[in-house]
Image 1 (cartoon, rainbow, N blue to C red):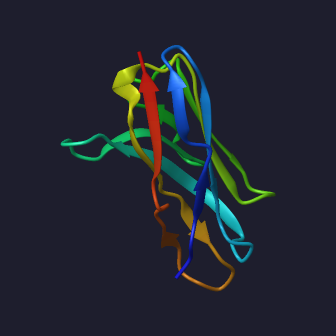
Image 2 (cartoon, rainbow, N blue to C red):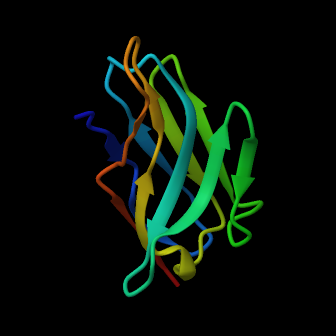
Amino acid sequence: QLQLVESGGGSVQAGGSLTLSCEAPRSVFSIPSMAWYRQAPGKDRELVASRSTSRGTDYADFVKGRFTISVDNARNMVYLQMSSLTPDDTAVYYCNPTLIRLGRPPVYAWGQGIQVTVSS
């Protein structure tokens, strides 16, 4: 089972910024598509942003202009840059990349989740 390591979460004041990172194992050859989801207490998990080589990037309306999803295939890293944070952005964030290893079928992996707390 491929394990992802998320980092970069924490607590921040409203208006602040954070960058979440999601590291895939070295055995991964490429990450052709990825997404970030979040889940706030008492709410369903929701899609925040997605990116793929075929469809480009897409963002939920509530983060457009504030969040940026990106990938560094050389380092097997996926990022979510977040700015102008508000208390409504408080949630556990999950990365969800598609991982390609040579000679193996794609794996749709999930990070362990990382807490982001925004105070007013």
